[in-house]
Amino acid sequence: MGASGASTQLIFFVSAVIVASAVVAAAANSVYGITSGIDQKSDNIQKEMLTDISIINDPTNVPNDPVKIYVKNLGNTVLNQNYITVMLDGMVVTDYTLSLSGNTSSHWDPSSVISITIDQTLTSGDHTVTVTTENGIMDRLSFRI
View 1 (spheres, helix red, strand yellow):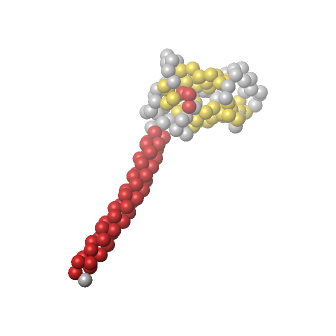
View 2 (tube, one colour):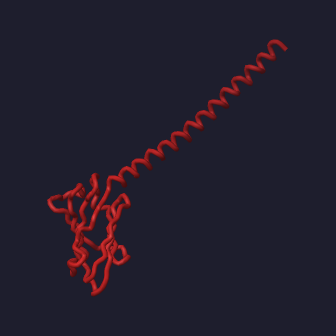
View 3 (cartoon, helix red, strand yellow):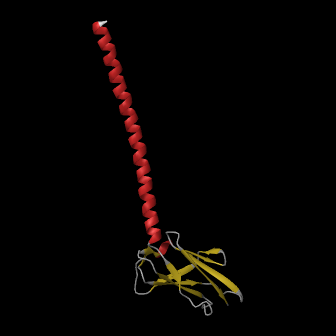
């Protein structure tokens, strides 16, 4: 059993090392995937925490025909004005124009005010407008025409 026993043990040892290496590689890949997911989620949460907006219209004097909404970036992060969602009375508005005073790019800097013009004439009564940013932060204004 001298040489053949040693050969058998060597084969088992090499096999065990190969299997252990495969397990470590698979575990490392899983840990990397989890770590990447956590990093991305924490980046998203940080952006949400640094984002804040406010609709600054006077609810008793909202311009009508067309409807004009003024939204201020109160957060500490630059937003992309092309990625906002506007809802009027619960319906998504797709036909509106944006105007950011003094800025021709799509960057909505902190403390800047964006003007949203909705080409609609509202009927008399109560209405609600909601503006949502790319990070999911929103503000809502209820007003009466």
